[in-house]
Image (tube, rainbow, N blue to C red; front, side, top):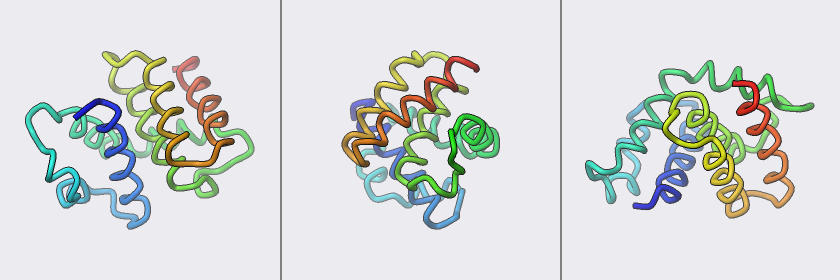
Length: 132
């Protein structure tokens, strides 16, 4: 599985957690797509989800700090999930280049969200990366 596909799967799992209001690893473990691709090489997915679950409050507080004129509960759940994946990478996974995290988030946003969301997500993630 490519890193892009893994990021997309992480976004989908975080989206499902948000919809269900169930922030638990069992959401990942019950995900059909994850079960189909699960191999030892997919530890990236485990890493992102585990970091998010351990640091959910820090991730969301960081996002709130850099959202301009918005609150988390007003952002589309897809955009929020994309922001969460990239924020976890930026804050907790130093071996992933910050620019790669931001660029990947923008590309995923272009596939899953509105056109105007990519610019907004870029701005939020750039501010987080600049001030981390």
